[in-house]
Amino acid sequence: MPWSYYAKDDINSARLLMSKHYSSAMMALFDSAVECNKRLIYPLACKKPLSSLLHMLSNNIVFYGGGANMKELLKIFDAFNIPFEYPIWDVNADKIADINGKKVIQPDFDTKVSNSVAIITIDKQEVSRSIAEKLLEIGFVVIKSKCRFLGFFIENFFE
Image (cartoon, rainbow, N blue to C red; front, side, top):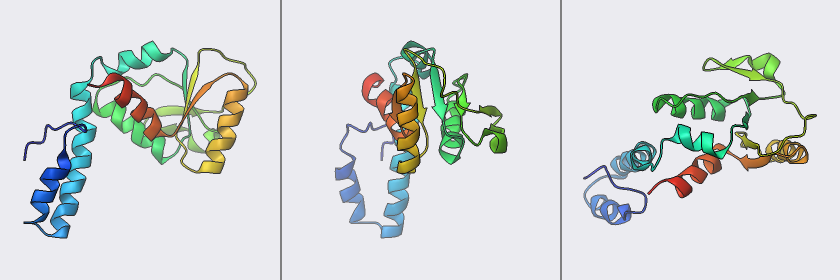
């Protein structure tokens, strides 16, 4: 099985063929491998380095949320040697202090901004919605969830 397929390739036909010969437990492993492959192959297809894309998008990027999703995003940045030089905001910053060595700070909902993007990494809808409203009020363009953030780059910057 070639592991260099892209999401646009038809992996379903390969899966169907394999499912005739392997147990459901083995197919679950196959599905996990496919998901891992997607995460690893996209950077190879990137038209430009992700760090330069972030820079092009905005020098004013804020990540909101100091929990597990942010920790996962930081691991992705680290895995691909992408420097993370953006603030992480969270109302619980005093309790969190840092994530993977990156400082978490209190949000600034009082200062108006322009040409700025806030990426909310909180999955809980009511919390995410409330934060998005506050960020929109002060001028941020809001991308809710780490999946939409990663999807934005995959859709716009990968072949």
